[in-house]
Length: 203
Image (cartoon, rainbow, N blue to C red; front, side, top):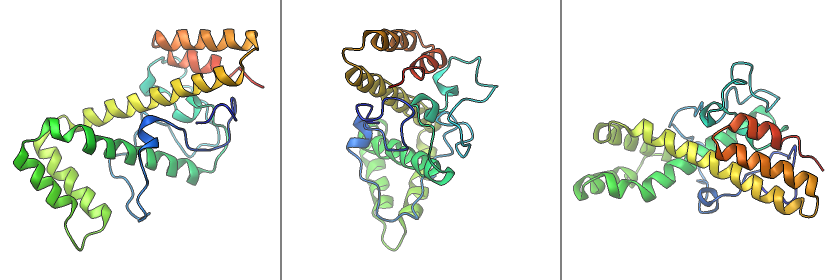
């Protein structure tokens, strides 16, 4: 997210990060991601508020934090939020194919996966479904790998938010002190405390 423009209570926009910068969404919008609902990204993503639920308030785990809460996003329709989560899932999937598959599969297995990826007369969704079924047979902990990548993406976006806010509030020491404290809390894996503190920093 571009925190230089929207440091707090941001409008609903795509965050900028290494995964998303290198990713172009497919033209076929019917090819929705099928990697699950990514509950670690957002609890009840259709809710109007980005604040965590009462069950989350005592958890400092990054997995339990709502991604919209962490990014300071307080607007956006349920459809926009759902689309955002879908695109994050697709980013994770594309990154997995680009950076992880070669390390986990043999050459023959990779060739078979490529055949599924390029199979004619199938939609992108059908191809992705077939690829996931195939990979699940070869990689028992595929779901855990995807979860870890999702958490890394969430952390990267949060750190970029901090970086953008630090630039935006340059020269305003009181706010910089709060941002520094929020960064310290994040470094100690206190993600709820860190996000709550960061969300108090306003223009």
